[in-house]
Amino acid sequence: MKKVVVNDAGVKLNGKWHFKGQEAVISNEEAEANKEFVTVLEDIRENNERVVEIVVKDENVDINVLKADIEQFVENYGKENISSADSKGEPKLDNPELKPDSKEVEVEGNNQEKPNPTIDEELEELKEKAKTLGIKGAHNMKKETLVAKIEEIEKAGVGEGQNPDGE
Image 1: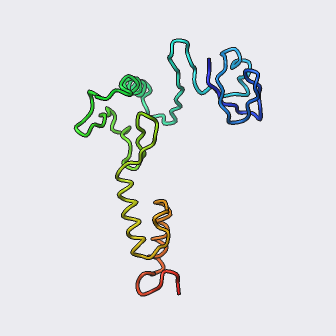
Image 2: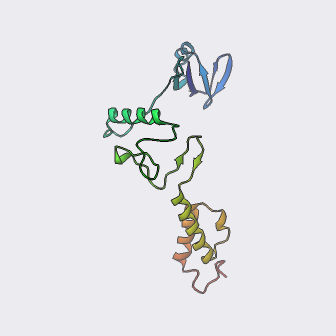
Image 3: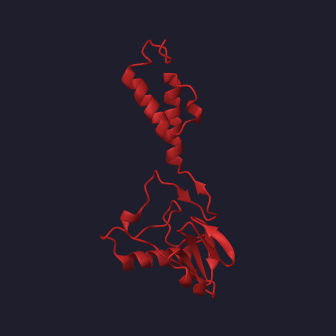
């Protein structure tokens, strides 16, 4: 069995029409017959093993080390106590280049995205600064929008005796 995504305008898989961007689980024979119309996302094996293809674009990455790191991660995935965790409860990474940035989003075990606390602190600071500058609706804006509005106002010199509406 293979999990595939359709690349072409439409193709009939398992007796149903699937269109560009739709995913389907089909037999190996059907995947082989329609290989020019679909891209294989995952190879689902009968013994509950799944094969995931990873494309590494950086030529400097040692594939064998990456494979070992991924295998170790998969073995420990979902376990509450990770033996190689540091005092903060975060897993230690052998390769410091693979350590995620503080601005990235952490993914919990239940596949829900949870924003990193440092992002929330920065966003709150920007909202406060926007409030003092008189930017309306700052509480609903994203970080990038807030930064742009604040820079625009600071560049124009608004906030020093001027009305933020430009009156």
